[in-house]
Length: 413
Image (cartoon, rainbow, N blue to C red; front, side, top):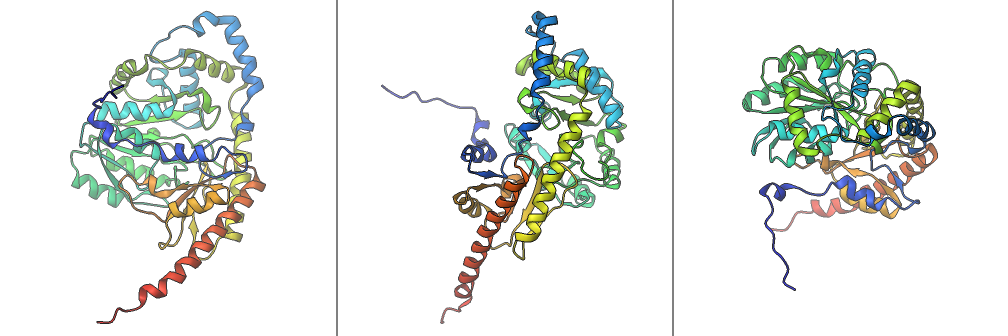
């Protein structure tokens, strides 16, 4: 049989499978200690309560819960989200500004569809979320990375790059417990960012899945709370504070931008799962989210502390890492003589997995970095996993030291 040769769209040339998803395939064995995925702790999912509210939704309004719905989303859920954003995050939001999405990942894709043509410039933190890189890549933009430090995006560098790219089409940021570094922007940096962006007619996409997972102190106010021009598009999700399998997120935007997002979503999937929206709305009405979020915070805080303590004890000199106040991740830098991809191969032989950090830089490089997740493993496994990883790093450093003298020998003339 003759094989059919098919022609694909040009944008497919730049797409690759997600490195995190590929690594997760290798970590399904129960013996593997995985620091790779950004997985919530499955034992904290409120399965019994969800069974109760699911039965109620189907018994009381099954026909409408299983029917097509509006693109904007279930009104009860949109009202609940707007109220929580006002009370918990200090963001003045009306229900009419809330669009329900199929996870915040869809919000990223819709933003790419709405704003990006081939070759358009996206400014982003360096490093930034791999899922956003992959979502935007489908629209073939040019990524311009902006320097970051412990307080967030470096505004001097942002201002310089805005001047260098006056036709930039989007700025993408994760101000709270950033994926992958775990860093949070200071409040001063947030205000300075908003003041700077107010001088440019460029949309800002604020991705905020982790802000409620704060273990100590307080999260800063979302950038959307400081927005006075309707310039900031806010992405939220129930995946990290509730149940990721439902794939329910939301987007907040000012009109007429909101109406454009609705139009684009109509062409993508008509609407997000009606049943899933009704289930979450019923759960919030009956149980609220705050007690569940507090349980999540307490567990993740212990796991973060276990990882940091183990890193202090086990890691060799020359390895550096962040100390996040919340979220799901630590960011690790090893000496430049090491390559995290090679370390991953050796670590998998020790049944430990992580994500090499180079994937989080859209323009490549930074081979000596890695992201570690602490939310999905119990404390004892975290400690053992860090011990194994440190052992792999020490062996790699010793091998690099053995190679170094040979490289320094001068070749006779």
